[in-house]
Structures are given as C-alpha cells and as structure tokens.
Image 1 (tube, rainbow, N blue to C red):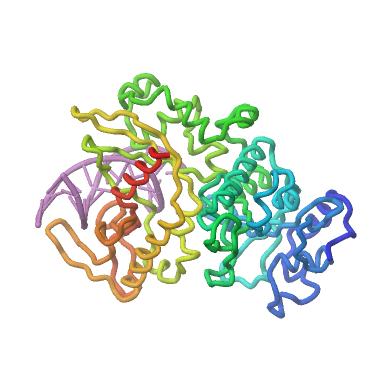
Image 2 (image 1 turned 30 degrees about the vertical axis):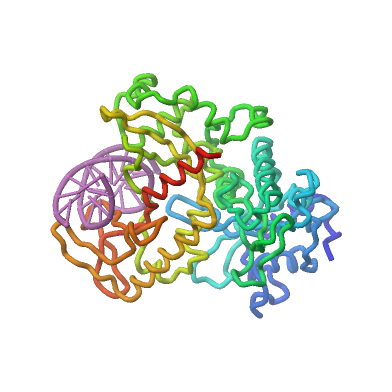
Length: 453
DNA sequence: GCATGATCATGC
DNA sequence: GCATGATCATGC
C-alpha cells in the first residue's frame, strides 16, 4: 500500500516542513519507538504521512513521483555532516542490466527525493532526535551526468559477471553498497557468473549527502567546479577529462611545472597544487564541488629510479580505545577504503634525483583486497585488546602490531606529530599514535596493474 | 637497501 | 593546536 493522499510534491513538502523542529517522540502517534518497533523512517511514514510501510518498486508517493527518505545528520566540530550514505532501492542483478538508465529501478524510484534530515545524538533515545530540515531534491544537471556514468559502471560490472566485485568506491556519486549481513542469506545469484554476490543497494555516497546537507539545505556558499560546462560530461567521464588534461604535462619535471605555474615555494601538497593549476582551477582540487561530493582524495606517489615505490601510504591515526569497540564491517578504516576514490599523482626520480610527473590515475581498493586488510585490522584489534607489547630500541619504541612483512596489503605504523604524541591504551598506559598504511609494494602492484588495462 | 620509528609542515 | 598527508633517516 502506498500513499494516495498526497498528490503533488508541494503538498508533501509542506507536510514534511511541518515536522521540522519536532522530536520523533512528538511525531510518533503509533508508539513505534516506545515499543522498539522499526526505525525513524517508519515513524515518519506511518505517523506523519499516515501510510502503511511498503516495499514497492514505485516511489512512496506514486502520483507525485516522490520517494521519501529520512536520514541522520551529525554535528561535527566544523558543522553538520551526513552521518551515513543514503541507501536507496536494492539492485536486482537479474533484471537491472537489461535496462537503459531511464528505465532503471534507480531512476524510476528515486528521480525525485523528499529528504528529511534528523539530527543524530550519541547515546540519546530515538524519540529525542529532532527533525532538522527537509528538502525536495532533484539532481542538478551536472550531477545527473555523473550519476548516469556511475549507473553505467555498476551495470557493466553485472554484465561482466562481476556483481560480487562491485565497490562503492568504483563510482563517484551513486554507489552500490552492500546491504544485509555477511551471512549466506544476503547473497544473491547474478546472471553472468556462477559466483554468488552479496546483496547490494543503490546509495548516494555519504560525501554526496554531506554536500547536499551543507550546501542545498543549510545554505553554505558555492564551491568551484572542475567541469564548467555540463556538455563536457556528455561524452566524457570526469576521470577521463582530468587524465586527458594532465596528458600534455607528463614527463615534465616537478621544477619545470612549478616554474610554468609560477609556484615559488614547495609546500608538501605541491603536487596537488600543480594538478589544480593544470586543470586551470583557482583553488585546490580537493575543494572543488566534484571532489567533495565524490570523496576523491589526492595522494602523491614517488617512484624510485629502480621502479620501487619510496614510501608506504599513510592514513589518519586511530584511537586505541575506540577501535576495540568497532566491528570490521562498519569500522572507520573499512568505510574509508570503501567509499574513497583516490587520485594518484605519480612522480618518478631519474638518475640525477630529479622528479618527473609520470602519470595520474584514479584508484579505489578492489573488494578482494579489503579481505586482506580485514586480517590486519582484526589482528590489530586483537593485540590492542590483549595488550600491546612495547620494546625500547635504539631508535625509539617498537611494538608488536602487524608490520610490513605480515600482510601483502597493509600494515600498522606510528603516525603522530612525534613519538610523544600519544593516546591511552585500553589496557593501561599510552602509546604513540598509530595508523594503517598501505604497503609500498602493494601500491606498486596497483599502479602496474592499471598499466595493463 | 629496506623496514621501521620518527617527524615535518600546511591548513583548518 | 592539532589532524593529516608527506617525508625523513637510522640501524640492521
């Protein structure tokens, strides 16, 4: 049963707006929350809009063509962000690949969204959450081009018999996230492979939702765009556009590039600045609308003369007392690897130790490699729980967390301002802040693999 | 030459 | 003042 009371998007929006500022406890007339039945979305559907919960392939408000979405925001130091990705409909692997974008289940159900943000508060009861704001959302044209390309990418993986390898990081705004437990019952058949694939749903990435919240709901100002004219994306992906733009600058030395763009100093993010200049941007590429929405992070890689990669790749440190309470599936590090797209800016040293721009490539971690990271992550948590063994050495303090030779993909190493930059351990005492690193030889393999395509 | 502990430096 | 991306530099 879907809703027939509301016939236009405007009526729906007015009703939704009437809930802004109210707590869910105030809205919940059927005592769902009190009885612990169902989530926040159910309360809105049943008590605010007064319709039966359903799982139709049509939008929640079929006559208005509007799909209702209720989703949490969370207050951070620098303001509100989306707490999660926005999970949309489940992908039917057997059917979806036969369709064109316009006929796809994603577009049919989700082309117009009524998004209601509520503010999540840690340790509070659901009934205390407040509806923060609401927006009737249609994708901006420029986004739609990227979303279409994302959709094509997801469907092409199904067509290649690789439904089990789809990762949210494969795409920019529209993702395909796994949905359901890791148990057998959430595995599905796929048309072009015998391999069962985990059930997946379309999703709007968390980074995309944060942008929607901050800019389209809370009124934050415009950011620079990489793509100035939407037409550019009609026959070009964002990734290809960038790679093509950089092409003429390959094999120039870092110094030549600095001279070319009148960059007189060499800060540590100099390579990011060079790429931004090549793309004719006023600001840093990371600040652009596209990179923020897609959660694309720039990483510099330096290749030695002998072809080896000089350094492993660091990530933000983790908190020892927090990580032991995480589950791998929902852990910060897995989420980061899954949802981040990386732009590798690759330089190589020549015999005279001069750095040359060799290549730029987009990369995200293949799902199979996440299983390796899982091992490292679980071992790390196990050791922290049972007590890290620390040994004083000539060069400082070493520990027994997974090292470079333990695993082909990742390891753990210190990452603070210095060795005195520490955090408490759950078993007592303190230790220098640590983070996960992607092994330099693993990165090398990833760069080489991309050359064989 | 590499693994690993340590630290720099920008930018928010 | 700290988080983070980037890089240094010792010692085996």
